[in-house]
Length: 391
Image (cartoon, rainbow, N blue to C red):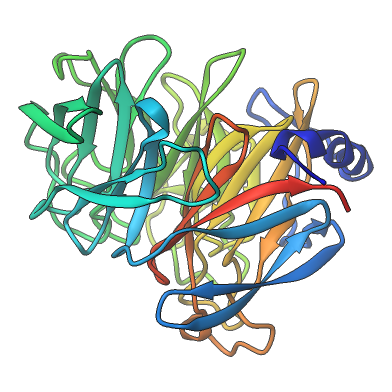
């Protein structure tokens, strides 16, 4: 008998109690060790992907995974619209699609190209009939008609965002405070930026005016999510490269106005960067991350659900032994975040030599009204649906 994704919460929370560590929610950690993530018992699930491909994912006991949509090009972040419609941003395709599933079945029944020819529309957000789309240099808003499945009334809310450089995606998020948040990555691996909007999360009024730097010192903050109940912004942050396999940690962290996470001068737990000497006292004053994770995991999308936080690790490219390529769950107890543990793996084969051996790379996470989760994969070009089941 099947049950909703949320119905496995008791099982996960029981495991969470066993692996819980004292990582204060408020912003502070006292140590970091290279990840040795705890894991629930896993079982293999074979998926039939487009092109008659068969691939196997390892799924935590009590969960199930299936194909929700295929044939997409570089699907990235998603947003839930009316009637269960799912908007999907992309990277290389330049498209924004909407997946239609009005009957509430296990998979989408139709894929409609809403927008084409955009410049890296990595991220989308939806609220009150309006679809927000973040491209590399701008954020636009459109009115969405679910009856005709069309967009209209385009307005550019924010223009002139920094172009080019090493990190070209922009993530847009609608805050519970009615403001608009946009993350902007650095132009380089490590350098002192001339444009102070780089390596930040910016905040704007809903009409795109009065832009300000909300938090800084984040080399590449990609995923943004709001913790329900307390309305705190969280971000996934990709740390710098070329300091070895295990440094610096990537971050999954709460973010507050005025926070400075140290880049480019400092990283991790207040370590000075060897290539950009920090000003006196700079590292001592930096904000400590909530949950430092294995270096080069490349955490991207995340979603709060079932008493914790699910995070997609996109995977490494410059590590001697590849890491990431999985979904982890970070349990919460009161105001403490626990150890990340694996709940969905297998995109990177166990005998992989480097990241090019991976057949998929998870990016975005979205919870549907039935409590199932969608996971986008920008390498395989598909979206998966994760549900709960009785063992």
